[in-house]
Length: 266
Ligand code: PML
Image (tube, rainbow, N blue to C red; front, top):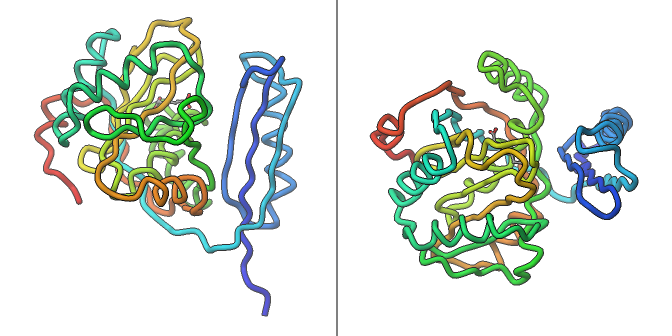
């Protein structure tokens, strides 16, 4: 009897040594050829310019992916970077993350150092990742075909059915499944993409439009973590395969009050 095999397919592209785009997912064997083609096309036709280097990894997974739900999604109508920061501070600090840590994360993301992975910060703002320049990359995550169809339908109603939102939501789903992670702040490093998000298990994935000014070419992610083994967390983020197989509600614009009054979910 042949066992079902899953493959992690990952793509990273660059132009003149500068990161252009990335994509990844977990697929079955029959999909490999099509996905490699799709990812290659994505790297070649990108608004930041066509890549001159494309790295593709196709790797058979040694362990069966863990199946999980996505985080629920909504958007706040933040009108400028100050309003987005204020909302991020309120949401993240309501989970016990200190204002100092959140301020530190904003400072580090705005300083202009392009990290390949995320920062890990304790709730006091102390950086915990072993390599402060590279950060920690979250890999080996994907979505089942059925859940992908459902997600496209739900995001489509909101005019958000694009790779950027889908991939960020999948990544956040994996990250926040791990109990040590209390919250996340993300600002895109794409100069033309000015919507970021904060995420927590209690509040879900909250999009923050206009978190940065157009044209700013840096950003990144910070994960706020509490008590536990950092090594084990990194092992999970980088190595444990996770597949989203259930899509939680995707809502349009909500108010900060509605978010803060929501009952914490476990
Ligand atoms: C990135 O990968 O560049 C970050 C994407 C943030 C997406 C925010 C959203 O629109 O939901």
